[in-house]
Length: 101
Image 1 (cartoon, rainbow, N blue to C red):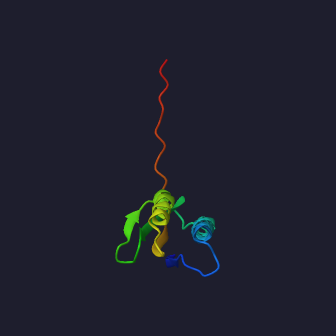
Image 2 (image 1 turned 30 degrees about the horizontal axis):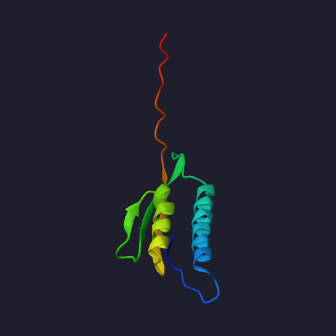
Image 3 (image 1 turned 60 degrees about the horizontal axis):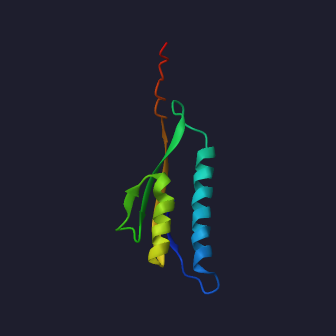
């Protein structure tokens, strides 16, 4: 998903447009996670960028997108750019816990 979201509409309030963007992002990530993984991979990773424009977009973790949208809402931006690209990856190994007897 590479998209510039516009947050201006004559009939829809600003807060509802921001909620719609959040919903679109969640729906996209959910849809991508349902896809079949290539052989040898066990999870989907997401490369994300966020900024007021394409040129200003900075790399973020998928977990930081909500904070970035909140900041854009507080600044009152009329539009912002989001890029989310899915790629197959591997889960990091769980840390082993040794029992002490």
